[in-house]
Image 1 (cartoon, each protein chain N blue to C red):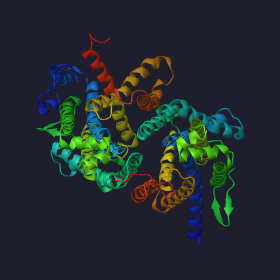
Image 2: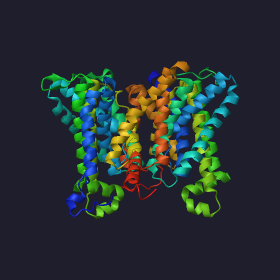
Image 3: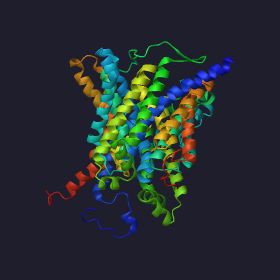
Image 4: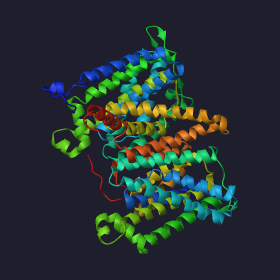
Length: 347
Length: 293
């Protein structure tokens, strides 16, 4: 709570943006996001689009894991469901891409509920393991249901068309991916101002007390699964339009671990955490690439070092954050903010 | 008649790989019993065992009989270091955090192996001989037969140690009630270290056996996932469960892989997992402690 922000109504207390400074920062962010495609080159736009997709998916997982306390290692598989749905609809029906994205989300939500229903008899680690099992079974379905999914070769996706223009360049895709991701983040932030979102948080903090307070556990846990899988499905659909092909190897267990790691590194149960976590985990491999390129003249076969170094750093980040900064990057940001709020008074 | 013979051969091979699954599951159970940590990195430590053996026996051309103990010691050392350096710091954190730490550890180990040895699969130097063994008329690969015998011996030794050795009794006491064990003068942190050291050493040994059958690759940690299913089915804290479920899962994988096709192996295993979680989440022999919804 900062100084001089006493709120007099509940509405003001629950507002997303409470101070003028925050409005100013949001303005800066919006201007930056709008200006970015005109300033950045194609490579950085590619990364920006990738970050947008990952932010959407990580925010979805944050709703399930960070806010409802249900750990899932199936986010990658749910994204695959969305991506396959979009690819199939695009090929067989040729519906507008926004409709496809929505359908992909719904399909993933349905699969998520289907997976969640039996898994919810157990919780904690058992749930995590059950979602691993479910994602391996989904992988098997993608690989073997060839008439729909194209088997091991996967499917190609035609570029999305918006108002008659095919979206092929990263510049064009940016204008679709970033607004969709922003909308989804906004939706998640608003979710936790409602009864449903507060019920999720109550379930996370103590499920038995939540039930005593009149929250039907099963219904709300399934709802959380559905919303989270919907996010994953839409993100997977965006992914399909971005990479223009979907295959069974596109979304492996490693992807699911990636999203859980992004939520952990960013900060569980924090919308800001999901965003910075996803951005951070997407950009770290690129930073490593620059590092490897920098040492390339001095080391033999530096190129082959890249993938293993990324794997090591990926694991090390998970370990280091969990051991030293369990609240994640969001907590670091809070600490910096607190420092400036109190700045002249506390050294 | 030959169909029956074929079935018996498949079954024997399944029992062989099932014994290896049991051995790996034993590493899970040992660590879970003592520290209540599900160590998903067991698969990767198993892989490290295979690579340590490769390094000692092939690269440094030591005799296999020296390389095997060194590989096991290497795995045990990793276990001891991880327990002391990371897991001990995480005491009292939520089980999910500790689980994710072991996931991260697995990633680090895979990366290190790829850095040092590259991503190509390799074969381990042969130390068991290749002459096939026949049980009656049924053919059994020599390596699988030897692995089965070794795994059975190791598990038997473990069962005896749990029953009679001071350390084994201390471990069971810690598993039953940490606070009571502590007040009886049992060195609980010592038990934690011991469990991780022995568990990871066992996994590394299983890695040497597994690697000598099918070769080693950075992806062989996936074997740990099958072993994870074994411990869930058998019960997370039950040695007998690991034994029975390991053999059962090995059989199911062999039958599904032969009669339905290789791609059905993992699916049948994980189908059993989901079924088990729905019916008996605490496993065949595990302690009932899971809260239901």
